[in-house]
Every structure is written in C-alpha cells, then in structure tokens.
Length: 334
Image 1 (tube, rainbow, N blue to C red):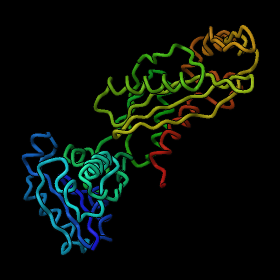
Image 2 (image 1 turned 60 degrees about the vertical axis):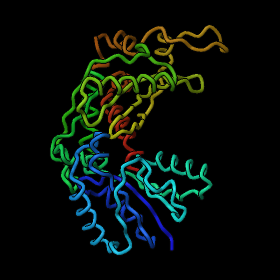
Image 3 (image 1 turned 90 degrees about the horizontal axis):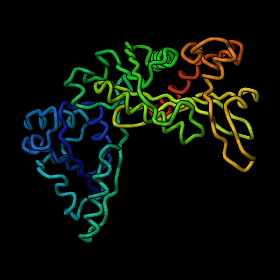
Image 4 (image 1 turned 90 degrees about the vertical axis):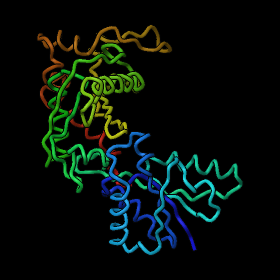
C-alpha cells in the first residue's frame, strides 16, 4: 500500500486546497496534518477558522471526492509533523509555495537514514484576477470562494507617464476583459539613470520601479515597473521596453517589440572612443527626439517611436506588449 502525507491550515476550503487533495487520489493511504488553533494563532495565520469547522469542511470535501475511507486527519502543532519520522510514508504533497518545506523534510529524513519522500508539487490555482487563491483573500472580500473578483483590480505603475499608464490599462483590460481595472501611476526613481544601456541595466530599472510602486500603494494587487533601454546589436542600438510585474508573491518579466535607432539619432546619443571600447550614453533618446521634433516631452505623449515611425506605432503599444509578455509565464499551461 502506497501512502502520502500533506499538511496545512485548510481555512475556508477553496480550489487550491481541492487541487492538493485531488493529487492524493491515486494513493491507498492518505494522511492529512491539520494545524491546531494554537499553532495558527502563534504563527499569525489568518483567517483563523476554529479547527472543528476546518476539519468538518475537509471531511466534507473528501467525501465528495470519494476519499474519506482511506484518509486519516490528525492534528499537528509543528512544522513537519510525522513526515520526518514515519518510515512507511512514500510521498508528500505540497504547493509550489511550500515546496521548500518538503526539501527540508527530506533533508531531515536523510540524516535519520529514512528514505526520502517523493515530492509532488502542485501549481498554485489562480482566481479570476490571475492571482492565487487564498483564505486571506477570500475573507478580505477581494475574491469569492469560487474565485470571482469582487472589487476592481488595483494596479500600481512606477511611472507618472500618461502613455505608460494608458498602455498598462489597455493590457490589463485585454488580459482581464470581465474585470474592472484601477490603474494609478507614481513618480518614482529607476536607480539607473535617465537612459539605460543594455539588458541588465534596463531590467534593473524596471525592477526598481516595480518595487517603488508597491511601496507607494501597498494594497495594490499588481505593481509594475517599466523601463525603456537601448540594446546593442550588430553595431546598432534597439529601443526596447522592459516590464517587471510583482503580484501574488511572484515576479514576472516581459519586454516589448524593439526598433532600431536611425544612425543619426544614435550618433547624437552615444559616444564610443573606439570599436573595442564600450559605448556610453551621454544624451537620452527623449531629449534628442524633442530637439528633432521641435516640441517638448514627446516621450510623455505618443513617444519617440511615433515620431521616428511617422505615426505607424506609438509608445502606448510598446507598453501594452511589455505588460502582456510579463503575463505569459503567469498564464502558461506548462
């Protein structure tokens, strides 16, 4: 008989919990450690639903799934329970968020000369807003038990540039067409200067802006940093916008289409002492385009790409692409 163990608080049973339970179906014996009220209280796990109610809801779910007769629910008041000492266990089920605990358990079992447990890691189950289910979010009223979003999706952007804010709003309306979206922009520092050069510096600027946006609006659901940089390639320089997206205890990244700078624009921006020396930016793309266009703040309107392409494209589209690309790894089915 193969046996599997899992543990948790199981407050306000939701789709994430049911995915964990479903993973145990192939096993002949299922052990579930249910945290005590005392453990939940001292570790500030919220919301704290009385253990009797949590146990009853868990038994009901197991009965619906036809797993009651082979499942033993027992109280646990520590991090590991019997998973580090029972020699008869075969596997452990964890969520992606708690996989680290399974690694710790197997390390302890190895020291005790017990065979390691097979680790079954279950992907986080996402609600309608693209963020993981959690009892805390259900109790706070952000989502219903069925995962429906109950309030507008709150998005903080680390920029007060209207074209970037409009692009973010367009991307989220496209990604979540049934949700109301509230986007707020905040003037923050990128920490990398006005005109980043290269992937590393541009990406760093986006990450810094996302972190600053989160600090500016702590209750937001997503915090975004957007940074446009020049990427050297085959003696040319391409303007690409990066997006760093924080949300749901995860950080994802994406970037937009890139366009090559006309050589006369690059000459006005970049100096290079020799072919062997690294290029150095001494003037921003925005400043150069403003002077060429004969107007101020082109970058806060339709952007340099609109001027250089004679209206074929605009900065809002670059932002929308970067944000949507940052959502790819969050939505990927594999």
